[in-house]
Image 1 (tube, rainbow, N blue to C red):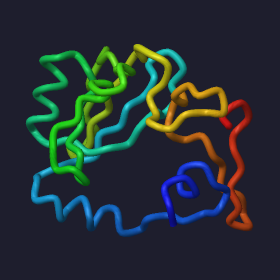
Image 2 (cartoon, one colour):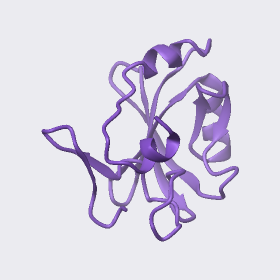
Image 3 (cartoon, one colour):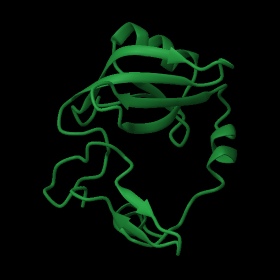
Image 4 (tube, rainbow, N blue to C red):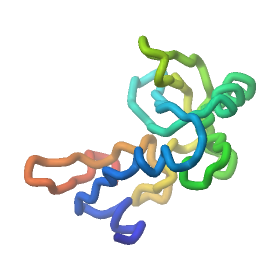
Length: 140
């Protein structure tokens, strides 16, 4: 499936191999979630290693470890759409982190809506019982 259909289409094509691929990057990582501190909306789920967490805390910007590129990824470094770090939380088992962020720029997602502006978050489609996808209201 090409990227346009994957990111903009209405065909469900979940990548159930993602965790195996992430493990294959060779880094010790854990899930890292970015949440809009004002709305509570979940923006991004990624991964962080120790370097990513230390960089996030130092730079005050949500930072991840890109498992596909195998490199540090400060969200917004290329696009200018940063996620300003307000608070960093850890779960009960200390095996995932939550970045509570304030968006700086037009949106957190690398995809753009019909208006050409980055989407607010990455969760802009809904899965229905029949397996079809539809865009959430105002997110096409």
